[in-house]
Length: 388
Image (tube, rainbow, N blue to C red):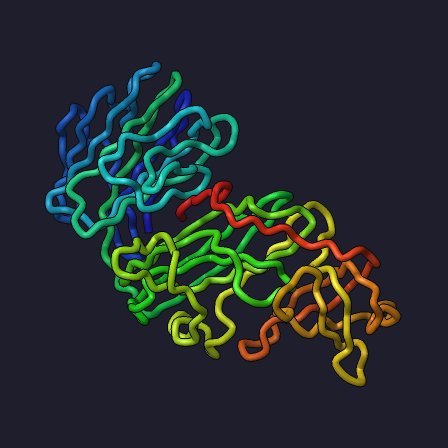
């Protein structure tokens, strides 16, 4: 757990805690700090705060009011394994940069630029952004950053030393929030080090109704023995279309950085079982409907699979592989379109049958249409990583 205290300042508010996994942690506010170089002891670690343009502010520390930037340096003796700085009231025109170690994760309404991260800003207009930066390492001796303000103050509220935690079992959580023109993806990875030949995990995107491999839109290098949260925004999508996102393990050849996910990616039953897929073949998927209002799951022709014409498969527009989702169970009013050449916009509800049979669709409405295919761009240019 970690403790968070809010304090409003004229522009940017920051509260800082050392990253605390679910175990006890010492927490202190800054009543101990008066001058650059002062130190305190937390959990047997001496934490020293130095920097410039800093002042006491009650039990907090902030930068001097005005346009001056504040340099913040925390040093640890002995070194620590993780550190988290939490921020709020970060404006979109202000930045956090000048890192001596690039943050491992950028959370909430903060957005990092560069790989590794070299600068962080608020994402929403104004100064109401809330988020955090995380650093992880086997031996962090210090963490340094600069607060670049327009005309405000940064308040640093508290610090904490976490207790450690071992990842006992591999697990993956995968979800999305679809909006009018983008999809926000969240991956929670508890990596116990199983199947170590896979060095990274890619997020692949394909049209919802299509089978086969998709386009890589993000890549997560593995760090065995850790729990990590990752967020991405995919803007290479079309309003009015549905997509499937799937996690696929990759093997980086010698000399190829794992974070690129360039070669060696294949679905793996062994990997899936290691991270919680009981049967191994289904893997980890999430489905997104992009756009405002009702969004069709697919466009194509419905074909009956047997005597019961309500149970169909989809001949989807634009798919080069067989449809990945079945069956498509249609209502009585849609039966006149089954086994005809009429292309349909198909609306419905995706359901999860079980780990063996996978996903199906209960069709709620069909609308005759032309065979319009989704344009899937392969560029990473509009992908924004928001580590969480």
